[in-house]
Structures are given as C-alpha cells and as structure tokens.
Amino acid sequence: MDTFIKEAITEAKKGLAEEGIPIGAVIVYEGKIISRGRNRRVQKGSVILHGEMDALENARRQPASVYKKCTLYTT
Figure 1 (cartoon, helix red, strand yellow):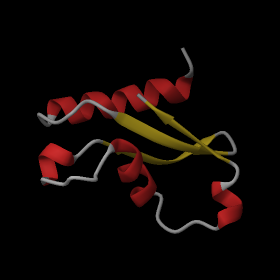
Figure 2 (tube, rainbow, N blue to C red; figure 1 turned 30 degrees about the vertical axis):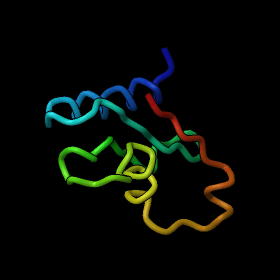
Figure 3 (cartoon, helix red, strand yellow; figure 1 turned 90 degrees about the vertical axis):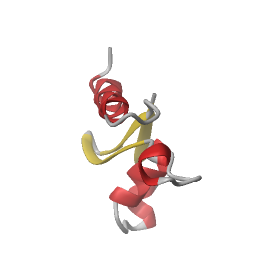
Figure 4 (tube, helix red, strand yellow; figure 1 turned 60 degrees about the vertical axis):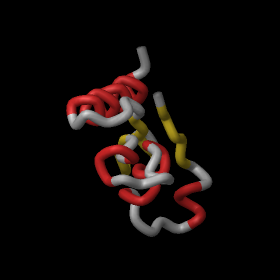
C-alpha cells in the first residue's frame, strides 16, 4: 500500500478516535506531505469541514504553482 494513503488512513483513525467520521486526507508536494486533515464535521459542528477541506485549510496559503503539482490522497 502507498505510503501517502497510509498517512491518510492514519488521519482517518484520529478522526474516529475523536468520535468523528473516519475520513482522512494528506496533500503531497514533490514527494513530501505538506498538509494533513481529517473530517471534523462532528467535532466542530461544521457542515463543510470534510477531510479534504481540513487538509487544504491546514496547508495555508500556497502559490498556485505549488497546488498545480500537488496530489491529494483521501480515504
């Protein structure tokens, strides 16, 4: 199994441990994880805080040139 999808699964497990929905995500740029996230809809009472959105938020502002070369892994 791919290392990055394993990391996304780790994030999903963290969400489950927090009694949330077990969905995790990581964003990879040039072979390195630049951000991680997990579904926090239950934990934060949010209607939009899916794992992918959490990972994007945690990546902070990046130039478009970085995002063009990123891969998002999600469970």
